[in-house]
Image (tube, rainbow, N blue to C red; front, side, top):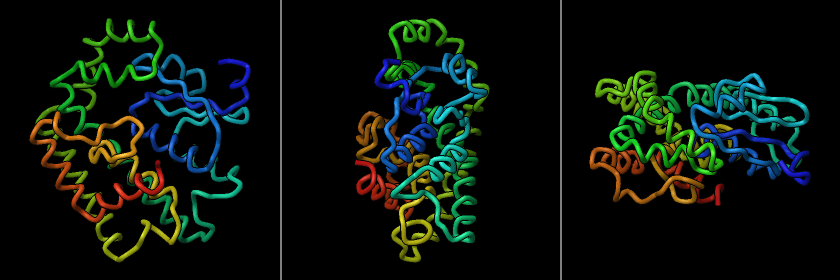
Length: 253
């Protein structure tokens, strides 16, 4: 890291990770300048482990290290000056945090598994995604380790037909919850302001919806398998899907 950047917060990521997009979006929304350091699996652990983390994102800021996206957003909210990610009202804040945890624990896992199920059938597309923004030496190492890494993720994430169907069910269940809230005519998920709930849902759903203005995902569907396109178009047409597309359009450019 050069001298100009050494005092800036450090965000360790896998560039295309939707959990990293959640934190990246929060930092951008709050106007916090930072340095992003991209790594490819499994080599990211070499860097996250320095700060007690096993996965990404990891944020190093003000001599502190945070290894969970919700903890990161909580901390960022305490140092934000002009804008905040969580409501001041305790009851509304609790609702925001409950939904955020649901999205992290259920939606984020399901969207990741669903995408990997199809991507593993074209494994070199995964390699290209993993290597976004990484160093040349890491790209070479990743290519060498890639055959073993893909076998591991196939087992770890249960990338079977049954696993894919379970992921789709979880995605639809979360979208149904959000549909009910958005159908009430709210501009945002909770309250009358853009908050951590909107960021979390939009970022974690973006892996399926592929909205315009996403920093990495291509919104064009022509190269996707027909089965993937069908679910993307179905979910984009829901109130929850429309919310995500609008959040990216209005808050992520």
